[in-house]
Amino acid sequence: MGNRSSGHVARSTVRPNRETAGRSPIRTFLRTSDGIAVEAVYDPGPVVYEASPSASSPPSGYPVFVIAHGFTGDVDRPHVRRAAAVFARYGAVVAFSFRGHGASGGRSTVGDKEVLDLAAAVEWARGLGHRRVVTVGFSMGGSVVLRHAALRPGTVDAVVAVSAPARWYYRGTAPMRRLHWLVTRPAGRLVGRYGLRTRIHHRQWDPVPLSPVQAVPRIAPTPLLIVHGDRDGYFPLDHPRMLAEAAGDHGELWVEPGMGHAENAADDALLARVGDWAAARAG
Image 1 (cartoon, rainbow, N blue to C red):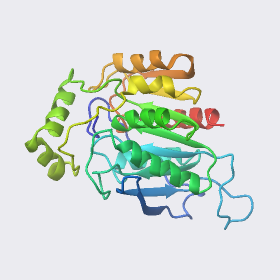
Image 2 (cartoon, rainbow, N blue to C red; image 1 turned 60 degrees about the vertical axis):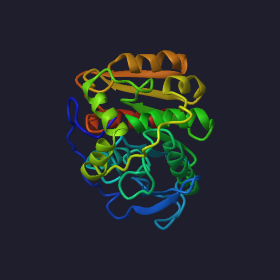
Image 3 (cartoon, rainbow, N blue to C red; image 1 turned 180 degrees about the vertical axis):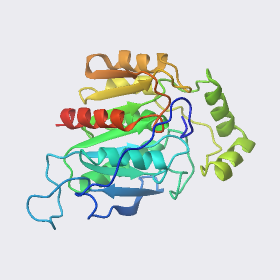
């Protein structure tokens, strides 16, 4: 569930374009409902406002993509910024650092309270004038976008989960066994804090949050896309297949040949396909 490589690592072909070069992103801190300060960045994307160059509200035809990164990521990680740059071709983008990551406050709960962080980012996107919101989550962020859409129905218009787990406490691969050591052991949390810039909460879940596979049936009728690589070193293919089965007819599954895990394995072409899908489905 991390931002580390396991499988193919994508490289960026994104370059600044004429539309976005003149408008600087907005960087701020959001306050979650439980009082955590969450670092967030808004990129208005390629939109040329019809009213005037100084218009403050985006046209309703363009979505905003809210990106939920993987464990040990943050808003300034290169692969998070690369994903944001690709999605900025299709609409505005809100990226943020989950609690315990980057400059955000608090400590990571590895997918539990992070739903509150995503909720704050979605609310900010709506407040900026966007009528259509797409959440895109990677790995841990994928589990968060699924649970957020299930627990807060009607707040988003499309959901994309990339490299997401289907169930909690999975230890069937070496990367996941390392991650569990990182989260559950004092020495592991020290490595997380000083080696990976991730502050992890020492308390175990109580109660255990709704699992991703339990959340998926509650998302309908919101369009749902599940994306997974067939070389994912963290979660094998039974995870996306479980999610797709739980989704039924309202979910779509893409199994990507040669792809590894999460945002660092999602190349620009795949991200562009996700952008196309979201722009068409979030209407």
